[in-house]
Length: 324
Ligand code: HEM
Image (cartoon, rainbow, N blue to C red; front, side):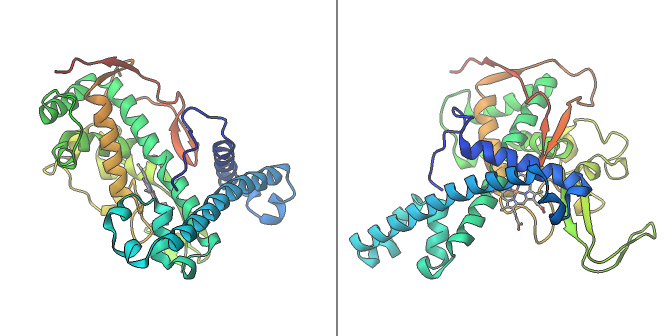
């Protein structure tokens, strides 16, 4: 949105606290059936908290949208149309909110409520997910130093041990890091389940019928660790299972950290780029240190908070590596 809430340094930001608490409440509601009916949920004290958090989020985003609309108005008055339409340099500096307003047709486009919904979806879908994936990957690399060495070797060759900035061509060369990230997303998918509504009666291979209108939960975690699809070593951390010659899925949905089908993750390519960019920035400069794992099955305790997170918060130590 183009607003800095300084979340790293200011963990007590009202927006951040409300967002986190709201996600907690939603997660509790998903897993406690008695909290599902609105009439019952609304009788409970947690409902007031839920509404308060929503109010904080809505007011914050509404204010940002309002400011942006005013900014646009001022810009319009001070600029002739041809400038804003064809100045490609300007587009590059635009935020996602700017683009949503402009490309949806400005005042005739998305309403403020529609813009708010888009911004909230993106905030929830696009921030913690990638951070959680980076955290799990670092924790895994601390547990498996030999795998980390191979990642470091690859990065060393790409950057020739220098401090030069990353360019997009470097990302394509990070083939081993790519496999490490994919394997990390398999064993520790930040979004461990998705929820769908059954549109028509559906008979499962077991013979059971899912009646139309019912809600179902698809466990990405469960599919990713099922020996039926991944073999007896399904729980092993083995990035090379993603080597083209070894990767042969029985069904495309056996691997779906970003979901699958028409409502899959909108940001999955961006997520892979940002995860690899962040990891390479850390791993080419620092050795990630932790307690090495005794066996091939990583023991990381997880908790569910809409997203799946590491109970210990992915705590690792960093040791500076020498650079040229
Ligand atoms: C490792 C990082 C990420 C993972 C594991 C992930 C995973 C997912 C999954 C599983 C869904 C489907 C949810 C469902 O069907 O209920 C989803 C949806 C979505 N994701 Fe991601 N995501 C990641 C990063 C991102 C990023 C960086 C963005 C934005 C830049 C993003 C934007 C979205 C959006 C907008 C949707 C909703 C799509 C729709 O409903 O049509 N995601 N994501």
